[in-house]
Image 1 (cartoon, one colour):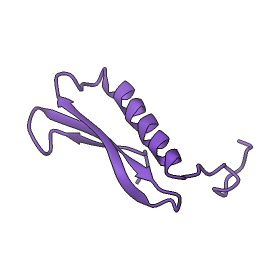
Image 2 (cartoon, one colour):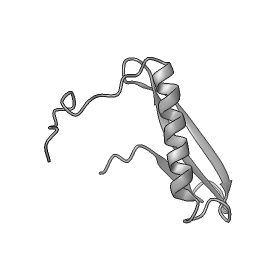
Image 3 (cartoon, helix red, strand yellow):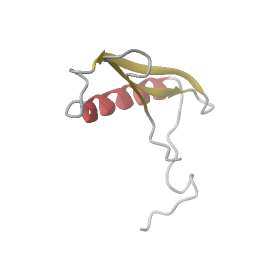
Length: 83
């Protein structure tokens, strides 16, 4: 499973309604809330979805940082700076 950092409700809860959500983390890297936006499927469509996802993720990150969340660097994640 790929961790993409957001979830989409594509009319699963209600026909004609789509929702995008992203997690909000605290200073211990625990999910403590979420930021989401819902709209009619005609408005939240394939064309507008990428921009909405970025907006929701950016907002969730902003709230997370205010709660003390610290974004790990590649070396902290066990990765490398080299491709």
